[in-house]
Image 1: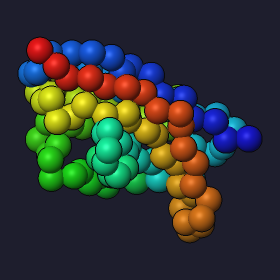
Image 2 (image 1 turned 30 degrees about the vertical axis):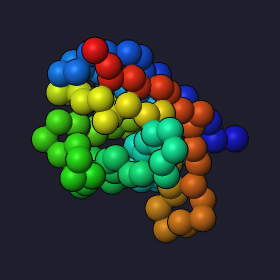
Image 3 (image 1 turned 60 degrees about the horizontal axis):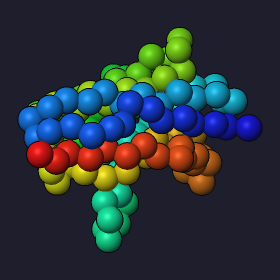
Length: 119
């Protein structure tokens, strides 16, 4: 059974930094493309960043480019999101997603971690 557990969320002032982690179990991690999504109150869930199986390819939402960095450690079955220069509009619940490459219907979600950016 696939399990994704996010951690690292919290409250931070504008301009601060946080590092989110997503620990995976029950899957062959290297076979999965990984992504971070977020959902703010009253808004739809949106893609924040994505990374390919071996980390060679990444992409970011325009709103986070230059501030956020996605990475993964396949040996540890863990994905990360380094978030710098945080803004109040980054406030949301952040979700980890694992999608089996070649099988788009095989997608898994974590429970989410809250990030709050406020002075």
